[in-house]
Image (cartoon, rainbow, N blue to C red; front, side, top):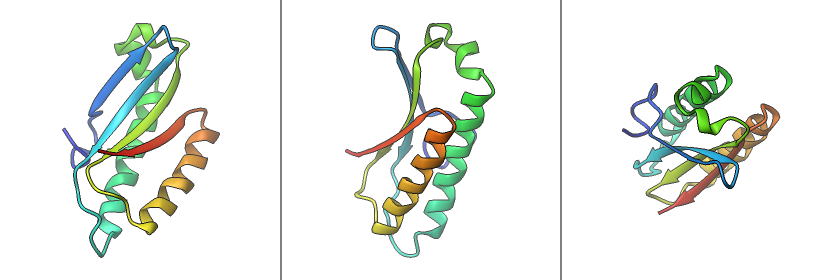
Length: 107
């Protein structure tokens, strides 16, 4: 599973002791110009994750996630471009307004 599988949640981790449920987007694509297609895939994937969270599917499939703070994490293979970083920051604001968090890491 990866960013290319738009309607699939790649990884879900729930830590009830810490009170966090993390949904991970696996992004293995390079940030080469033009980045528009890559950004569109990322936007679609984030929207899919939001639908999953807002629709209550996390709690249905992972009952121990009830009461946990939910975060979407983008696990990137490559360092994001400046345009991608701007997109992530704007997406973070929207996701936080919805009651969730958005982070990213480069592995």
